[in-house]
Image 1: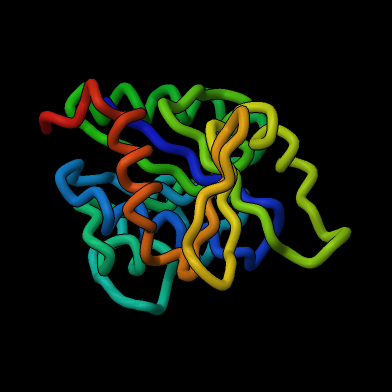
Image 2: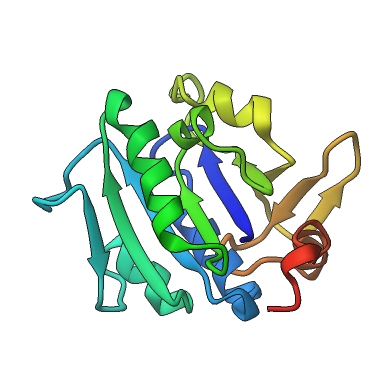
Length: 181
C-alpha cells in the first residue's frame, strides 16, 4: 500500500489542486483519494463515496484527475483515529491512498507527507504543525517550476494541478516499493 498525505498551512492554499496534480502525475497507482474533514459537507454518513467527476466538489475533482475512488471522511477529533484504522484495514494491502488532511498525521504515518505552504500570513492552521513535523517535502506555488535543495526538498510549482517532472521523479523514488503496480 502506497500512501501520501497532503497537508496545508490553511484554507484555500491549494491542497485539493495538489492532490489532483499528484493523482494525474502518477496514474499507475490507481489512487483512492480521501478528503478528511470535521465538517459534514451535507453528507449524513461518516464515509461517503463520490461517483461523479467534475469541478463542483473536491471529491469530484479527485475523480476528474484520475482517481479510481474518491471519498469524503467526516470525523471529529475523538473519532478520527478509530475510524481511520478501520478504513485502512477495509481498503486492503493493494490499495494506494492519498489523503488531504493535516489531522490524519496524529493517527497515521504515510510513506510521503507533502507540506503545502502559501496562505495569507497569520492565517495558519494549528494542525499544520503536525504536517511540518512529519513532512518529507515542502511545496510552494511559484512563478515557475523549480526545486530548492536542502535537508528536505522544496518543490516550487507554477501550477499545483501539474506536478513538475522533478517532483514526479522524487515521488516515484519514494514510492518505489509500490511502483510495480
